[in-house]
Every structure is written in C-alpha cells, then in structure tokens.
Amino acid sequence: MSPRDVTSTGATGPIARSAGVKKDIRFLRSETYAHYWFLSIQGYLGKRGDSYDRFLIRIREMYESLSIVFQVLTNLSALSSEGSDISTHPATPSMFSFFNFLNSDTFSKLNRSTKYNSMESLINHFKHYSEGIRVPRGFVYKAVEAPKGEFGVSLISDGTSKPYRCKIRTPSYHHMAIMSRMAQGHYFADLVTILGTLDIVFGDVDR
Image (cartoon, rainbow, N blue to C red; front, top):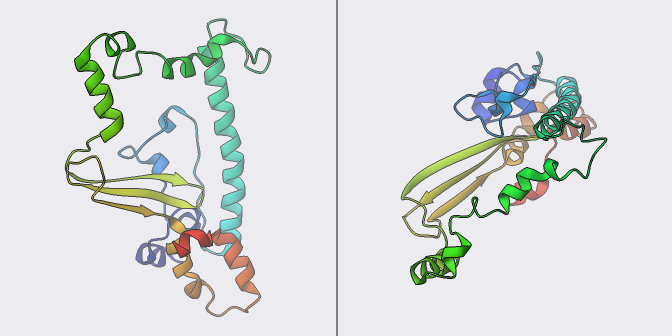
C-alpha cells in the first residue's frame, strides 16, 4: 500500500498508518475526545504498507493501550481524597465518586424534588421520555479511532426526535475493497496473511 492508495480507497487506522499516512483521530485537536490530550500516548507509522508493517503497528498499539489503562488508573487514584492506590484499596467509596455523580440529581436535567411536586415539571419529564430528544435540524458527523480504523456516525435531522437519516461508517467495508489491490502479484496462500492484518469483520461488510 502506498499513501496514494490509502487516500483513494478511504483506508484508515493501522492500514493507513502502515503506509506512512499520519492519521489518527486521537491526535487531532479538532476531533479530540475522551481526554486523550491529557494522556501521554504515541502513534506508530510504517514505511512499506505491507502485512509486516501492519502486524508491528498492531502489536505496538496493544502495548500503548496498556499504557493508557495504567495512566487512567493512576489518575483515578490521584483523585481519591485519601490519596491511596486503587490496587491496595479497591473498595474505597471515594474511588467511585464519578459513578455517584452520574446517579446524582445534579446530572439529571429534572430535579426529583420538583418533578413530583410541580405539574409543569412532571409534564416535561413525561414528554422527555415519551417523545425523546429533539435534535436540531442539520447534519453532523462524528468519528472515533477504533482498533480497526475510523468508526463514524453521520446524522441528518429534520428537527424531530427521530433521525431523518443515520449512516454508520465502519472501516471493514473500505478495507475489504482494497484486498484485490493488496493481493496483486502474490500467491493465493498470501490472502490469509493479508486478511488477518486487515482485521475485517464480515458482519460489517454484509451490513
């Protein structure tokens, strides 16, 4: 795979990075999510775009995922009021303050004390759960960096609570289309290695 093949076929993830294309949504400041900017992460690029480059990138990203997990656990331990380690005190109540916040009244749009004592609040509560959220009219596309590549969802709203059009973009379909390009000049047995390094989910392709 060459950088030109990557851009022309819409390849993403380790497939694109194996050809030297520096594209990772986690590093884009305009599309950043999940506080990746507060973590120390490293991206890996290949040179030839072959199966061995893709293999090395996936192995290195496994170690990078472990590093991200350890950093997140360290930050959770630092947020505890006792300053203790999560491994030594796994049942500390302060370690679950984030989940307590999700269940608190401050996270909910409707306060329970007013919901059961005010008729207007009760009507708004009923309409919220029966009709759903009214999405503003327009088009939006958001994507995340999945292990297989760019996973995105595009929504077109007409102003109602139901999407006018919803399109889910998975990388497997795009990567399946470039198998014929990758297999040129190789043996039939090489398809096993090519398919394995592409990491295709055939359910996504069928969908």
